[in-house]
Length: 212
Image (cartoon, rainbow, N blue to C red; front, side, top):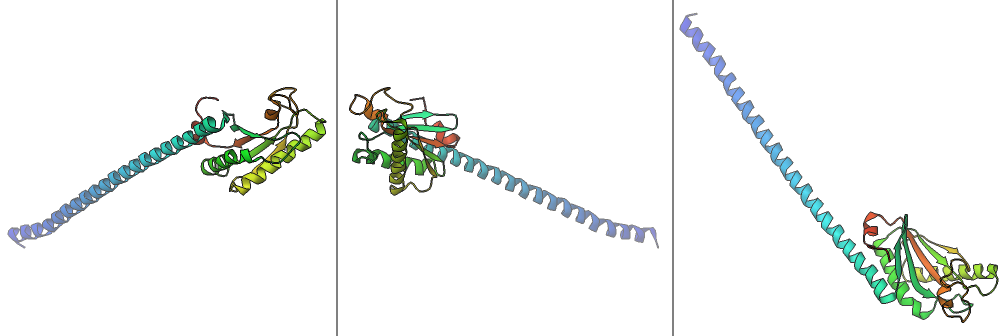
């Protein structure tokens, strides 16, 4: 084989390899560019989703705050943050020696049921029943239990069925007005129920704001 012929053969072999190398580099560049574009798009989508989620949570908290402020302003509710939940001291009171839920308690119970089901779904709600000190301690314990049970049934009839509800009786303990019984001034505030919502979550707790 002549030198010239050998050179032509070598060139013929090298050129395809060079073209193949160029094609491979171009393919890699395209793949890297596509991957970078996909990654950038994913980051943008993730950021937009996070911003939308933050905005939605903020709007939800503001809506809950408005509901709680309405309960305070329109119904005189006292709402207090606790270590493991929220306490609602609502104006749900009872006549002397009576366990029936009065008509004037219906609007506030309806509002409470709506707030609890919408903003605290699945949270345990404890209904605490109380009595004034008239009568024996045992009788008052039973009376306060019946009051709490009747309120529980009322809440269920108002649609609060997605939350576990439990009742507890405190009888004549923890009086709002110590010693006030029967027709004494302040006795009606002793004949009451109090609601405690447990495991409310961080977002719902934020909406409570300053202690009331």
